[in-house]
Length: 184
Ligand code: PRP
Image (cartoon, rainbow, N blue to C red; front, side, top):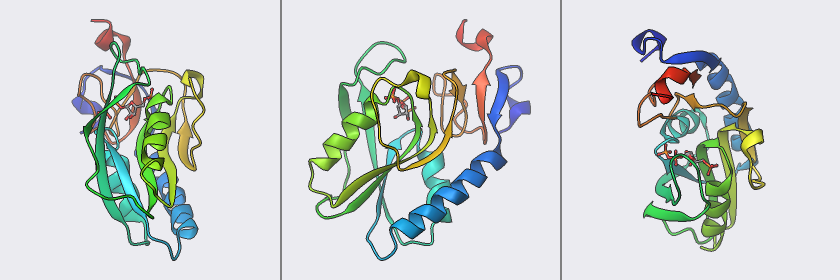
């Protein structure tokens, strides 16, 4: 899927496929270096993280295992509340494992903040975060991200796993959505 497939739905491309690929190369190189000689479990947070997980994991030389969680934030509309419900839990036992949570975006930070403390309570050796995008102006809590792609403005973005009403996840870049799409 590309820009030509979505008509006038997009306003501006913020990060091209090349921008994302370049950052993924850097993130993967650091992860390879940091986890050398250590076990590594990548935990993807459905559904947005599928693209980052697929592209980041394939760049790693380090052997990994992969697991997935699905969580849902209680609250109204698109806003996180920080109260999180597990829709699908991990299949893996985290005891003694080095866990790297893989996310598409940190918005308020409430989901990851909850997730980190939830996973830390399961006895892992370590829990760190890799996220492609972060909106510093939307932060409601501090999240310690070890591997970050890009800081972006606090605008409605889609593509590369990010959706609006479940659409646009398969755009290969990150773009802002044209207001006519979400204002009806
Ligand atoms: C997005 C994103 C994070 C979360 C970040 O997921 O993938 O999990 O929101 O928001 P926060 O920092 O404000 O907590 P979403 O709930 O939209 O689900 P999805 O991944 O299935 O699209």
